[in-house]
Amino acid sequence: MSSTERSSTHEGFTAEERAAMKDHAQELKKSARRSSRADKAAEAEQDVLAKIAEMQDSDRIMAERVHAVITANAPALAPKLWYGMPAYALDGKVVCFFQSAAKFKARYATLGFSDQAKLDEGTMWAAGFALTEVTTEVEARIAALVKQAVS
Image (cartoon, rainbow, N blue to C red; front, side, top):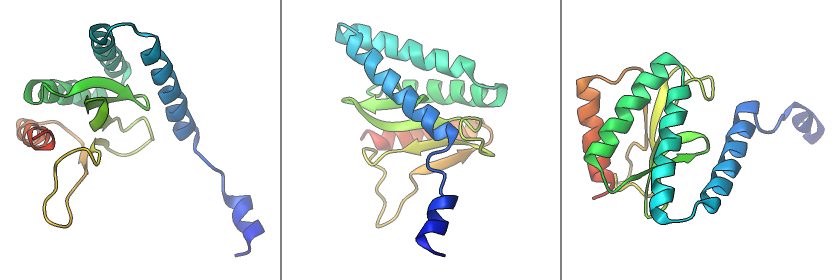
């Protein structure tokens, strides 16, 4: 395939990716306008809860349960929006996030961890988990993962 053939088939970012980048730009602007650290934390959590409330039923139900598990088991993590997704940060750096299935038209939601998460296990470890349902067993696994991530 020649370079002209490749460039004519490359479409760049998808509409969903462009929307996520716009969300992130808005999040940064909104955060910069907030006054005190306490205001920022309270408003950031309200933003996360509002974003979760906007999700489709199955994603919303999972996101609500994931949010509850993370905030209960890793209180050091601060909820915030990150590219339009609920995320949880330590000292301003995202440690984990929930990505709804609908956001990128995927067949499952994702619980992802950044390189800030202390999940290291040998020379290879999982940094993302597909979620189709949040059961009691899944909640226990998420609790263990977020505790380890901030340890």
